[in-house]
Length: 294
Image 1 (tube, rainbow, N blue to C red):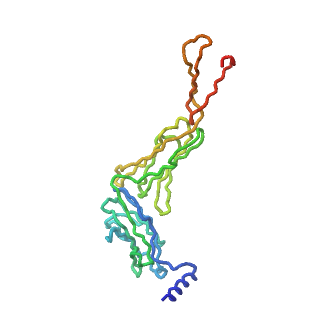
Image 2 (cartoon, rainbow, N blue to C red):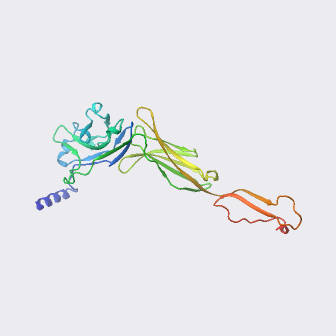
Image 3 (cartoon, rainbow, N blue to C red):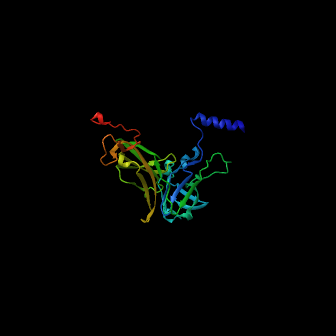
């Protein structure tokens, strides 16, 4: 038996790669807003002997807790309406499911069915079947609370007159209704892009660029992500903020005299200098055009 396994592995290696197995690749968890859609990034691999069976008769099936909830051959008759966005012939099983709600919460499994010998449910066999990867798709839904924003850097430091960048990131599980990102206050130019993560999920990114000023120091800068539902109604929003720490030279230097009234000659007079600066000015030097006065 051991000799036969060694021969099999050697044969696969001689072909330039390990033998292909039934595997599927997708995120472990996706958070979805109730009333919105979710696009599941999904790709798969099959054993070489089934390559000829991967044809136009193949369909994608999604199961939730062992119940079929989506069939790409009859998408409008499925429990969860949606559409297969990937191409099964290219081993792309990405799927969009619409109008999700908490009743659809659970573990999702992908099944490939073709009108031939190729039929396979991609799921873990309790660690016994080593040809299958742990690929259960866990989908968590919330009714009102949107995903958490990421704001970078978490501490905004800059020098007056220099360019400052702030990046705001919000998950975009429903690609047809991505979150709208806005900045408060509106300080400069912002650029929005849809970014793909390592697990193929998407984030909406907004980068705010502005020139730092002493007027920004101590101000709270906020990014807000607003989500809309598929029926057109307004969904929830979430905000994150950071306080600007801008270094700048002294502004509005003032000098006060005490006592302020007229005093007799040879009396003591106190001069007090103050200014607005960051970091604060520790030492002041007083001078006079008449050296006899100081």
